[in-house]
Length: 272
Image (spheres, rainbow, N blue to C red):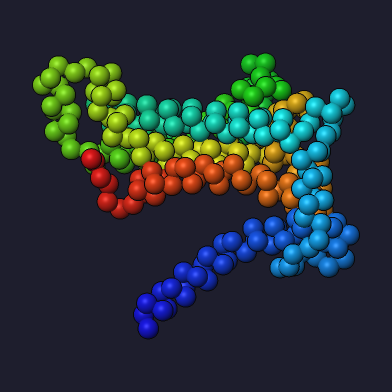
């Protein structure tokens, strides 16, 4: 009976989580007129081929430079840039806080952690002014850099470094290894799984950006997939089809990194 109850609760949780995606997929098979008349329903429509063909052949902009492929490239540039730089900066910040013994290390860490209380939206005006002064308006770098100020990765790396045996550092010092050699030969190989998890989370943050790219870029050639949903129509059949396409790349990334992602978030941390 207990096993049945546990499985039932898990099944209900899964259905609650995937219901919006299923609803969106079914809506992508309906015509826009049917959606306006009947709303979103859990049934297949007869316009799935038409809607997805409309999306794949979509062009917009003054010279038709806004296409699904162009928006996909922009999204990948931004998401990969955010994920890669966030992972590297978080790793180096945690490394300096944990292994470089200075009096203000704990204070510096808490100052970094406090940034979690201030979402990017609350910093839009000063961030925009700084980005404008640096001449980064309408650039990929201007979209990427402000998002890097996230402390979540630093927190996860710090907690991981704290549970590593101190004997690793002592053995490295006895072998005459300096900070860079210890970092390269010991910490980086041990941190691959944790880095993979942080990369996935940061990729999602970069991929799902909407307000900041909308604010910092007026150039049509910098449109991302998430921003593109507005162009096609959020309540239309093609718009729902486009929304489905926007979740495919992150889903593929999670499948690729799922082993590292889930193992790094588990309670037991394997050092082998």
